[in-house]
Image 1 (cartoon, rainbow, N blue to C red):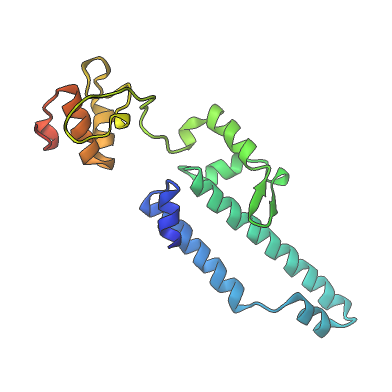
Image 2 (image 1 turned 90 degrees about the vertical axis):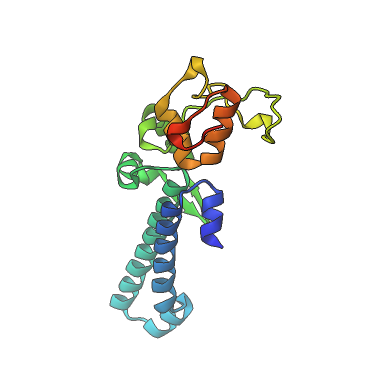
Length: 187
């Protein structure tokens, strides 16, 4: 269920599996060693050394939660290399409030503008134009810069679309009036 949700949010199967694996590992580790704070404080009593250890453990737990939340959020925004993107963030300005990362989104938006190559980007297909075809395809699916059309011809983009959605590649080629037998999509 979580993997399906991650995929619906735009992650690839591989990214969803990676995020789910990290989530499951953290959850299992956390639940395995879970002791309530109240139980710990009662057991510690007045022992200063144990209190210091408890405070350190709580701080480490919060840091781990923040790190896991950032890792998940980087996967959500399509970071190609989460370590590289994370290194460019001011993590001091990021905090966790429940399940929300405060100060994260603004930094990511700036990075997407300044260093877009760090993020997965849908092939450069911008806007939509109407289509009146009778091939059962929804007009809003066609991008204005259909790479199968003569004026936007781009084999790299064609291959990217074919790799992600062969049926969409066939439809775009049909709309452009192109026979693309090299893709096995002949009309």
